[in-house]
Image (cartoon, rainbow, N blue to C red; front, side, top):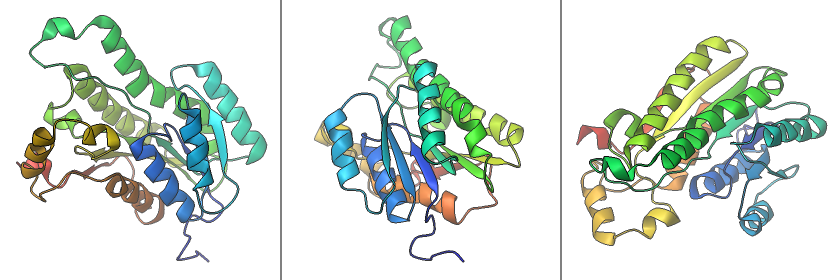
Length: 252
């Protein structure tokens, strides 16, 4: 019988990029739903340990892993296998970008393009590849890729970022087909999320983005984390879906 208060009781959830604004909110909500959370980080070790101290429940783990380095992802898979023997949910939350005007083609240098695709597309793919055997171990695994409406709108921090998220959505479709029925794969596609990073940007620009959104505000990290929780607990017949969490921004 499913515990209504803790529908993910004893499920194992791996969250990459756990120290970010989105990642930490996702970890908190999954832990609150009863999951045993494996939080990964690359830098910001103090923030990672602080996050772990504030997660409810027991059985959580913190693992240093770089999604751009397949060797460390192999280590992550080994650690998770030794400790839990399975993965029920993988949330690919790692992402990177930098603001570059779309018309300034010269400013979007090769190194930045490669870094964005290495982190935003190859990283999630390599993480899925490393954990795929564990995702298939129990009664159905789930992968949630954190995408962006920039994948569809072509409006975002730079051209490469938009393209990397479009590629992530295409990977969601491809792997939803390839890994079925053992593993479901879904993308969560937020609009602009009001993380600490975004709060540090120009206030007038932030207000403008909110007024362009039909629901009149930016997404909160919790809006995104609740969408992840819904896919994990309620939308059990969904795979290959791109789920918007954008307040209707694409309607504007």
